[in-house]
Image (cartoon, rainbow, N blue to C red; front, side, top):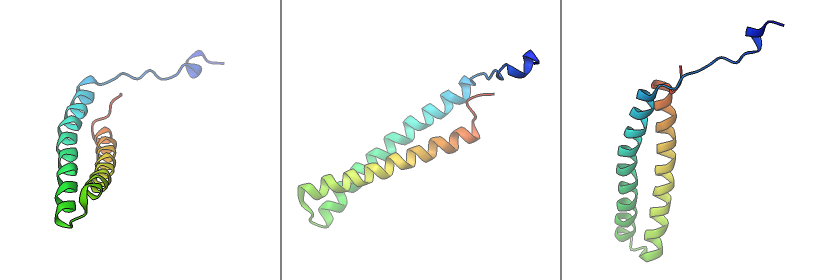
Length: 84
């Protein structure tokens, strides 16, 4: 057997891309989750849902925010690959 065939391909981490995606994710997450909590409070107050309605809507918007951040990081990794 050829020794080079069994050796896995070495990949290097591109720290500039990792740092770019992490910094953008932190900035966007702060905005997304802040908006989620504010929207939950605003809609629950507007619809007179009470204290549990506020918590429920904030939780729902928070879950949507987690999904949005997951998709953002997936797409950002495609544009800015972490390895070469």
